[in-house]
Amino acid sequence: MDYSNILSERAVSLKPSGIRKFFDILDEMDDVVSLTVGQPDFVTPWHIRESAIESLEQGKTYYTSNSGLLSMREEIAKYLNRRFSLNYNPKTELIVTVGGSEAIDITIRALVNPGDEVIIPEPCFVCYEPITRLACGTPVIITTKAEDNFKLTPDALRAAITPCTKLLVLPFPNNPTGAIMTAAELDGIAEVLRDTNIMVLSDEIYAELTYGRRHVSIAGLDGMRERTVVVNGFSKAYAMTGWRLGYTAAPPEVTYQMLKIHQFAIMCAPTVSQYAALEALRNGDDDIVYMVEEYNRRRRLIVSGFRSIGIDCFEPEGAFYVFPEIGKFGMPCEEFCERLLYEERVAIVPGTAFGSCGEGFARVSYAYSVRHITEALERMEAFVKKLRK
Figure 1 (cartoon, rainbow, N blue to C red):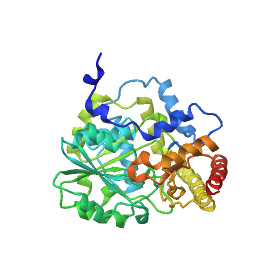
Figure 2 (cartoon, rainbow, N blue to C red):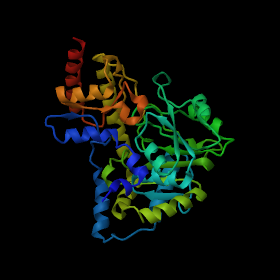
Figure 3 (spheres, rainbow, N blue to C red):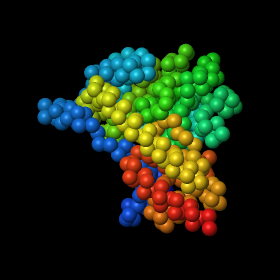
Figure 4 (tube, one colour):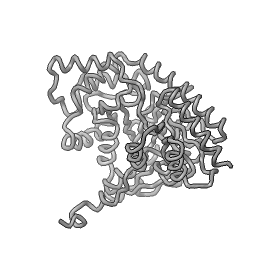
């Protein structure tokens, strides 16, 4: 078989995730302290797991409706209203998806035609650009800068808009930088968009993981609900990564089109996960408070640790990552991370895994125990000392 003439050209042209390379190396090494994974080190709270077990014991192993259990969508609507002052109709404006990743995928595919431009601020989560390309769209990258605290500015957005612009991806709180957008900053973005036909994909998977201020959704600003698809899920806030459950919240005209894609590709999200998430939504607010307090403690520890060993580090206000600047050590960030891995057995992710503008930086997750973070910082200090000799 000549697979070069069989495989999709678009699929072949995609670069694999830059994160995976380091995961593959880790699989073959011992005694590595890894700060790579964007996954809570907490176990899903027992009352959530117990609810899932109870659903299985009761034989609730059937398909749900394509959109998800109505009771689930009703609880999502209550949650969005309670936590972020957003109002959505659970019957026509919400879809339960297989993780936030599927939610992103069906949003882009439902909106983007061949040749449409999708504005993507980078550094950012790895999937937006490849999904845009698979949908035959054209990614338009905006580089966010450390001097702007890695936030999207109205001037940068305005300069990137063309007659072909269809969609803006708004990835805040941000993976990998930990940057957030305040209400005033979002209003500046909204002002650029209000008189256009540009839609917004607001990826709010880290909405509950903010420090010092509450998350604000751009969908809650005047004139923005009608042009925004909110993407969220349960992986980060409730330590439910393996349950693979997310959702979209959008105007009914958009939701209807996304639902068709979801129907043909997925059918419905896992039933047992939906019953677990029901319990999370109803009784999980205290779990969020506890985990955010723990992440905040680790955030302060790791930022202080980097600064004490002489590595400049933007102080994140959301998510559970830091994005330290390592460019001053005179080597590409991938080389820095590889040497750190092989010489000191510490794994972090090169900034270029999140866009070429990530050169000179690295992503470090603090979704790990204090003991784990402390050990990693001690090893990194030894590595930095060697580099300075």
